[in-house]
Length: 136
Image 1 (cartoon, rainbow, N blue to C red):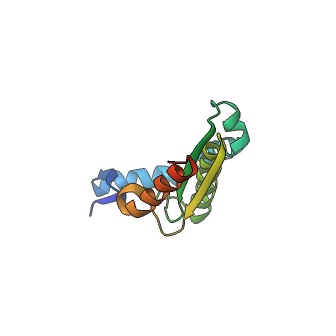
Image 2: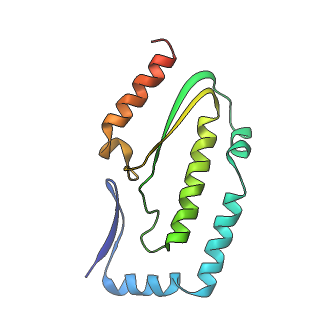
């Protein structure tokens, strides 16, 4: 049976069972796990403040960032790995929000990866909120 991971509207991978089996074997090897965790640990070392320092400030421009709360980053990752990646996702998007002097960062607990397709009403609310903050 073929497997795939659908992240909203985009199929991330779709391969024959034999290819998926080889991929899973490789991904569960000790060498792969060490490399993957090293990457996560090094990326997590950068916090929102560090990321914001490297970006242009937006001043008083209102910014509303919506973050999905119900997305498995990769279905073959363990719960611990997905939790670490969700933490990274939150910190990264918090860094984006903090580029503004008037940030709003909202977690959508039931939203998966592709918020505009799955929760368009949340996007409309966020746009209207930003417009209201801008006085429009």
